[in-house]
Image: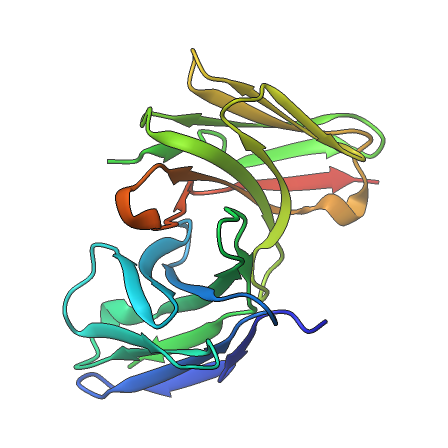
Length: 112
Length: 115
């Protein structure tokens, strides 16, 4: 079975632009979570979606938004990009009622 | 406020010996703990987990120990192999209303296993 997939792999944007990152969960997984990892830190929780509903939100500004589609894939949107948004963005999926999350390879976002 | 702490940024061990990676937490609402391994330019790979109702879980060369009274867990790798060289993250999942599954990560420990 394919693991969690994310696209694109790398992305370069300039300050003020908007970005959309995409994630496809493992087949059968209905929950998708997004994390941000900056250099030297552990991943930090941004959002969790389950059955297209937001289940949890981390301490991120409203410039960050996400949604989940009927096929359980998900998008993370970031508006008005700042230099500090440069990071590795990770998507993770899990089965309902199971605590273990499985991560994709991530999207490396660079904001210039 | 760092709720999950990995106080050793790095650890170096000889091939064949035991690697012990440590993790401390402050939030008593954490009820599930996980260890992930991460290579550069890849996403974290799940290694092993433990529920708060247990004190030990073993999977092959990997064993996780949980000491709830001390709010401490450790990952033992025996025997260590050069392919184990990576950054290891400790993560915890708190009990939340509404079923949110929000992992809280430590900053990671870089393990180097020398041949």
